[in-house]
Length: 126
Length: 227
Image (cartoon, rainbow over all chains, first blue to last red; front, side):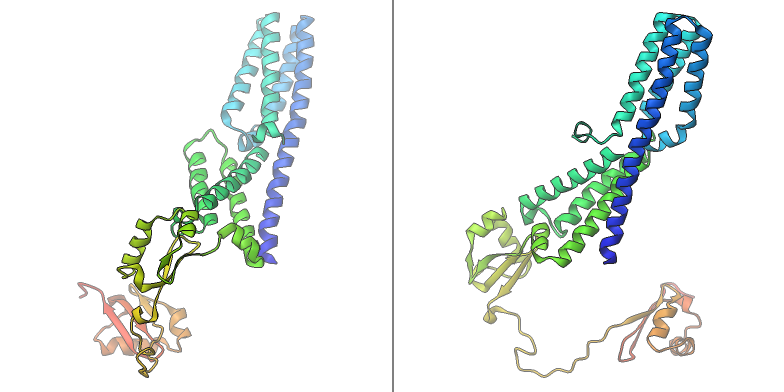
């Protein structure tokens, strides 16, 4: 039965790892988008130091997971998010409310799309 | 990753089904499952190898998934004859008593030209010599001639010949002694040195190939240009 249990076990392990990676990314994305929502609120209130601080915390949190993210995600998607973080930070520094809100909205969508690619859904598979 | 996992499974089974539907002649010498594995794995390995923007696990996970699926298919094929038939197909008789079974040929998309090519390659000029031709699951054709057309064998000719076929064991391979084979055949280094001395050789490094069979006869090929 070793001929059955070994491949079946490896398949189960791959499936479990894949599901875990999808769930982990979903949880982390929920956390990052919550932080970015705080940045948007601060920017709307023109609290630029608060917005910049919240955005920096969100970026540092995102940056901590880069090694793991680079092992499971296409690097182009991560580079795009990185660029949007940089653009949002620049807008906050310039205290440009409209531009900051646009960049943060784009960044939020980008992060959600990245997480969505790892979720289990008919839309992704087909 | 989960997308890659499910996509790999889906593509594997689509390719498998496609190859099974195409018939045996498309397959060549590989079983359908082996061919699918070969086709996909080579491509999967190449993509992350060339594109550094794609994580390695995106290539590794599908490859490991395919290997595991293939092992499971082999396991179930061994356990169930019905499943084996589903995965590998069944041999098909395409010539019976010298008569072509056209329906079976058409079902496997096997042409008359291909049949004659197989007959000629196996030394048969026409269908009159063939009692059965069977299209195997690997895509090869096995030809069973009428007894009167079959090559003469000692048994057929009523001759009693001694069974002198023995399996040679490789003892020196390109100058290196195969110690496991040497001891497994019941010989030792002293015997080997003696055999080399008989041939005026001083070292195994001078030997390209040395074998001994079950009857004890030694075949020795020295290296070209040895001093």
